[in-house]
Amino acid sequence: MADSVSLDQFLAAAIDAAQKAGEVIRKGFYETKHVEHKGQVDLVTETDKRCEELVFNHLKQLFPNHKFIGEETTAANGVTELTDEPTWIVDPVDGTTNFVHGFPFVCVSIGLTIGKVPVVGVVFNPIMDELFTGAQGKGAFLNGKPIQVSTQSELVTALLLAEAGVKRDKATLDDATNRINSLLTKVRNIRIGGSCALDLCSVACGRADIFYELGFGGPWDVAAGVVIIREAGGLVFDPSGKDLDITSLRIAVSNASLKELFVEALRLTNV
Image (cartoon, rainbow, N blue to C red; front, side, top):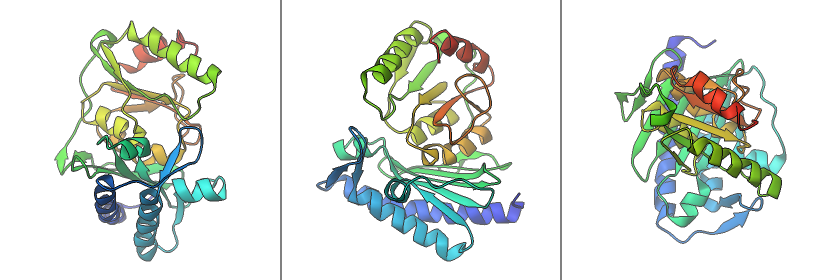
C-alpha cells in the first residue's frame, strides 16, 4: 500500500491531469461534435480520445512504472486485466451522450488502484466547475471543501440514482424498466443522470441517497468514484449486498443506514 506522502503526490498529479482534460472538454462542449458509435448507444468523440491521451501522457511522465487502463484504449485494444500493480484507470469523458447533446452532466474520471483497491479518485465536471477528490484515509472533497453522504434513513424519503446501462436488447431493457417500476414505489423518486462517475459523487456529497447500475461500461466508470464515496462515509457494494468487485460491472452505493433496506428492495426485483 502507498504511504501517505505518495498518496498526496498521486492525488495532486491526478488533479492536474483532470484539470488539463477539463479544459479540452469545456472547449469541445460548445463546439460541433464529431461522433462515432462504439455500440448501439455507446458514443465516442474526438474529445474522448484527446482527453485520454492527454491524461495518460501527463501521468506517464510522472509515474513511468505504473500501469494504465483507459476506456478508449481498452475499447480499441480489448480488455486489459487489472493486476496488483499501481494502475491508473481513466474515463476521459464520462457522460459522452450528455456531452454530445450539450447536457452539462459530463466529467473526466481518474482513479488509481494499488493491489486492485481504489486509493485515489478525482472526478471533474468542467462545465459545472465541480472537482470531486478523495484519497484513502484522507477524506472526500468538492472544490476543496469536505463532503459527506446524507443521513437519510428511510427509503421512502430517499432520492435514488440509476442508469440504464449500455445494452439495448429487449430482455435487458425489460429488466431495467421493471426494476425501476418496482423501486419507484419504494423511494421518493429516481433520476437517470447519464454519468456513473457523477452519480457516485452525487451520493458522496449528499445530493442523492442511493445509486445503482447493472452493466456499466467498465472499471473506468467507478474506480475514482468508489474512493470518493468511501471517504465521504458511504458504502459501496454489489447490488446483491455482497462485496464490490470493480470488474463485475455491477455497483450500488448508499449511506450505512440505507444499505440493507435497499438491498432488500433490489432483491424483490430479482437482481
